[in-house]
Length: 308
Length: 248
Image (tube, rainbow over all chains, first blue to last red; front, side, top):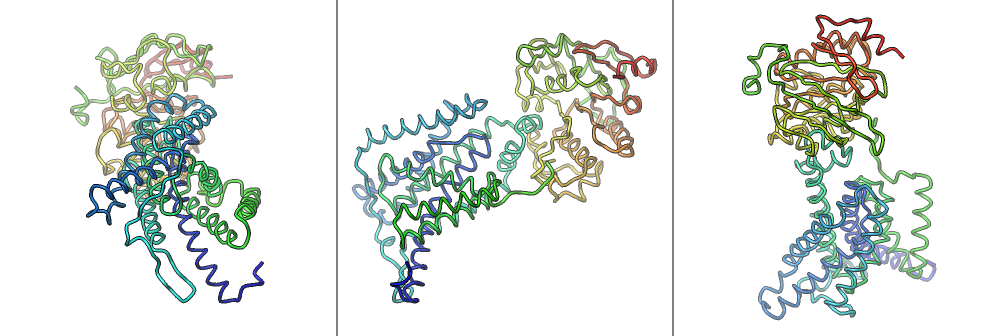
């Protein structure tokens, strides 16, 4: 399949596809972070995670149109505000959902799967009713459009760089929150042993609510980033949820580093193969590789080694 | 009362003074099968009480029920006069109960220091008090290690330090000697008495090893089939009789 390209072409292709992969990687990481935190904390597999992401995307879309029509002067910087609002909207909806639905189902993990799936259908229909079935696109400010010419044959899009910077920032922020803050300590204690965390004085219900909100909020930011690489429709989130599950499982549950490494390897494989093969063939090969590796290492890429 | 000036307290106080912990007609069940059939006992401030009994007699269930991990079916649990039944575990910790479970249950992926810090949650402080490290110097030495990589005896010290971090009035320990080597068991007996003497708190521990309990406790309760069948002070304990309850 490489036959018809020269060596120079090939290296350019790899760099550019690799970069396209990095944008995909950013969305995956943000999605998977939220999913992994929620799964690690309360053992809930949030099937509606894609819809929380799309909520963030719609919020970004609303911001974009609002600024275009009412505050064109501030349009160049609307994206920052959009991301904050996306985080808050998805986070608030997440906390509401935890309070109204999830907390009643903690002792029935299979039911949470069904309940969150139902929630995802409801949200999809809500988006369809509110925003219409047609996909919407976000207008980017001019400074985010265009690309950096690195060499004659390599171009790197600016919005990709921006998305990656945001991802790095959020990942570092989450890592600091989980490993350095009081709240993170409580999250990890509840993850390790819920009844015992209660017995040392941690209010695990409160921790659950904020964790769910945080995970969903990060998905909202992922949605904001997503608007730059795809158009937003009621069911766009569905396309990402399966891949995100795969990343969480492949990375090893409850390992932040594993999640990042697995998101990176999966998105890069996917993106590079997509150029040479068809999209579905690329997906087949990626999935096969993941299944093969998981058979050899069922615990995922990274796990902590301690006595339990 | 005593928690306002813990250091000035005289050690063991005779029953009769207002109890710090009072259990009344406590019933607990797993689903349909009742495990605790109406327990009654009180613990005086500064007293160390051993709950003896063979496996399966309800000692751990009693501990978990007091801690709110197993719900009480009926009855009352009061600490310093405050009713605890119906409260969540963390709220009971805030009321002055602390718990060292069977098997220690430290957070194995967290460092020693972080483990102790989790116990500080209800106090609102962030810094591990120096006196905890003074009591368990080995924990200071290992504060950056993951809890799961400590030995059994070290984990037990960590679990006790974590429980003490919440400044409890009553410390509950479930089978503290289980899985710990004999030399360390003796050391632990001394530690428990020292904790009581220094901090003036009350200690309730469940135990199958009579020699350890005789070393540490002021009073003995013997449980059988979810009921308290025997009770005596250390001064007038009939060792042979208690030993008979413990033999299989």
